[in-house]
Image (cartoon, rainbow, N blue to C red; front, side, top):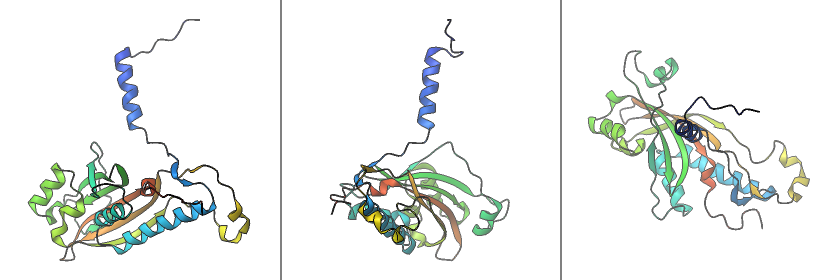
Length: 234
């Protein structure tokens, strides 16, 4: 039987397959520090809700994540770094323009970043911001550097108002509190949490009460990536 030859030259095909592999979403990986049993899932749920509450009560997601990174010793230098994701464009919807209080023809820029600390990508953020309401130096930093948005606009004393929270993963099944037998469940290896855990959507306002940006933040399972010795085993 004759083998079917690729229509692409071998070097080109290799490059093409490499690009496709790099663009594919990363598969969820089990969290080796979190045993997949009842107690481990309860503790994971508590940890996720602790961060969720901190984000909802904080003025800056960047500062909240830096504190999280420091408290859980996830990096020698607990500093959040924003890695720009290029080649992605998401024009604002009419509804987003209404929330930002901008006219249909007023420029709104889009920026996507991954916020990481100590090699852990803690969140991925889509940010639509109004350049006319920022200082020229702020716009320069946003366009040419990886500085997190919250740090760039800190001089404006921004106030954050979260208007939507979505849970993407629940460690425990619905109604678990009524199933007492689940507490006797044996460990099943490392906790296999999905990549995306929950999302926040928020508006940032400057100290003059003008909205300067809308952000959608997706928090990843790497928020659980600290050394949780003994989790789920007591």
